Image (cartoon, rainbow, N blue to C red; front, side, top):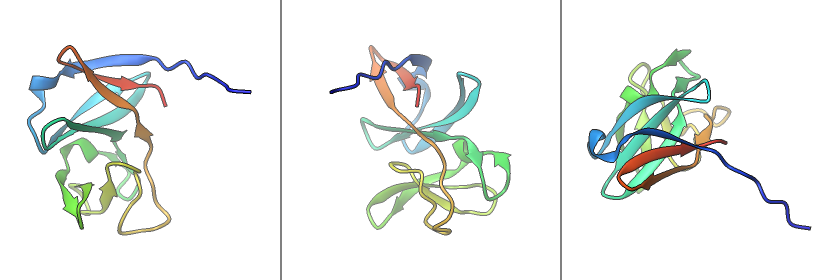
Length: 113
C-alpha cells in the first residue's frame, strides 16, 4: 500500500531577492525558516532556530562548505549545520529541521515538513 502525502507550499519571496551564498528568514506555518541560495540553482531550507545558542539566527549565518558539503555556520557560536540534512558538524547530538524547497516561476516556495 502506497501512502500519498499532500504537501502545502508557501511562497516566501522572489528568487532574485536572495543573493547566492546567503540566506533570508521567512515565516512558514508559524515556524521561522532559514532559506539559503547556494551556487546557481541550489536552494535549501532549515529551521532558523540555532539550538546551540537558543536564538533564531541561522538565516544570518555564513554559507559555505565543509569537505564539499554545503553548510551554514551560525553567527553566534559558529556551529556548522549541513544544509541537506540539518546535522550539526560540531555536535553529533544536535540537528535542526529541514524543509522541502523549490523555485517556481521565479518565486521561492517552502513546503510543509
